[in-house]
Length: 141
Image (cartoon, rainbow, N blue to C red; front, side, top):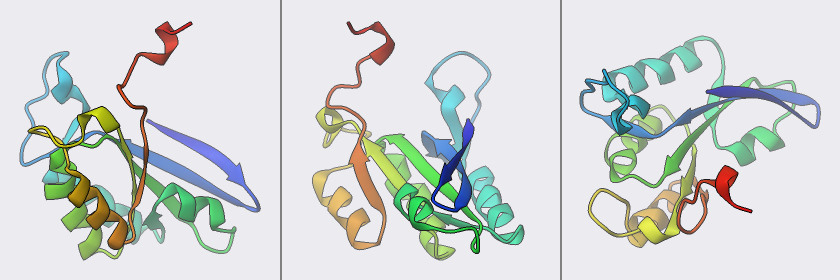
């Protein structure tokens, strides 16, 4: 999923990710349909850079102007695999991203801890809210 946004005098595109896994076998309708392999994610980052763009957080995109082409990189939910697989790939390329975290999910197996979220912020990543409990917003009154 991507969208184009005009902010100030710069335009940018956002790439939205969920899970980054060592390998994927997404063939059905389960949660893995939202996953990308580490290799695929790294190739995506390399293409972003090869095409002359800088991969960065949404805040950095909003602050950019037309003189620097940027691509916003975001992650939904706060999965631990983002910390384990996506962040090293981003850091190796000098890129940042925005991590939208469901706060009720912080800590249990499969999700990042508060310490890991603080570490992301120290590394220049943006940590933002993805609601407290991840309700289906279209079904709320």
